[in-house]
Length: 333
Image (cartoon, rainbow, N blue to C red; front, top):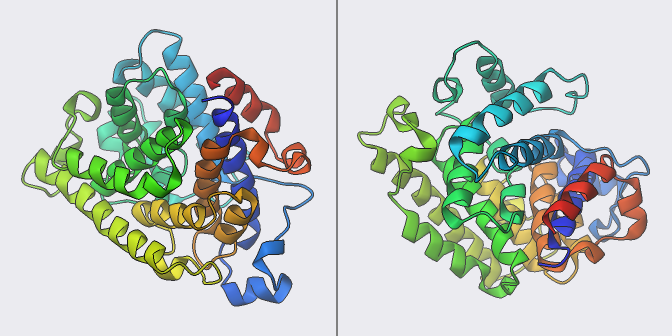
């Protein structure tokens, strides 16, 4: 995998910092300041948002859990809960954090509350998968560990089955790109993966989470999530069949406020420009939706594909939390 972990972590932070400037703005307003999306600048003080903050929280929890043996829900959940609560209480948590994350973290902080009861089973916000990339970068994880941990980290805040499935697909996409899968084959691989996992509920990792939703069975709960991901993959394939790099990507695959659309639109920006990572994150940030999360995901995919050299050295120097991102990249590379 070379330096793919470093590339993915730097890419997600760079995309996040680019999108921080444009989030909540319509494309017309962005264009008033920067007429050409290809010239969207990284700010001199390249601050990240809650997307990278929570990615680092997951990375720290993952490092702690793996220091105590093979990854299991029993050794991942406690440090992950602690990191998420610490993030929610941090004075640096002033970067437009998601309300689902904040409310769930408040419940997680209550003594004795099981995470399944703290989770919001009605929310499939992109806060579930904007932070999941580290799980795709630890090559020692088995497929089962990647799958279960990706859903567990989502479930602590976003327990909707589509949030769980989109998180797993996001982590799996990062893994396959880091392993060298050609981008042109990615959507077919993700579709096959979703179909293979449709209806599978992993009670070892999720416990009784499904019992707190409205579905009749755990299998129906899981199927609902995978089916929504398969639907958005149809939209992604249609957009790639008639590519338009000049159009707002949110018009094709969604604005990215919800997990499956963040995945699809982040993938769209990357797959439109697979060999031009800087253009991919600029295209993602120059959009009408959840620009920082879309660009964060596009950057993770591009960096996992191309490695650390994908990113301009002067951009890397300016990115907030650069040293910690590089530390985790070195650990997993």
